[in-house]
Length: 140
Image (tube, rainbow, N blue to C red):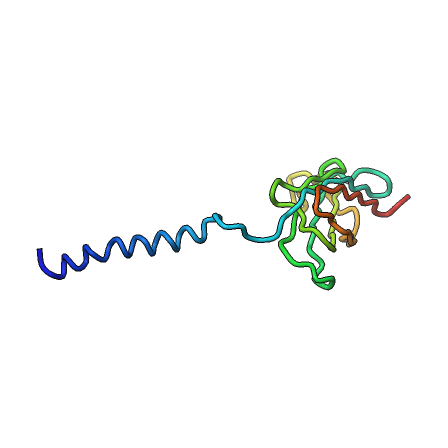
């Protein structure tokens, strides 16, 4: 074994230690990001449950709130955010889209049917806990 080969063998433990540190630092072992809370609720349009849609909760940066957005699917007038992908506490902007749930024959470009309304925007305050936020769009 040459001197260069022995030198390379001695460097492996150092290299593996550095590589392990780098990989473990990005594996979610540390607490990262704000706490997110589950949100549930009902969404109606003209007094009837929205058959299908999407609801997005975005922290309201104009009120100093920051963090990731949360998204949930609306089905038969109800929604629930996914576990650990909920809403950050504080002032939140809400964007809702809703569809009639009747896709055209052959699918087409609107697989969830025709839009029921233009995008609806509202604001809510998410507490540091599970919360229910109901939305009534185009009241009868």
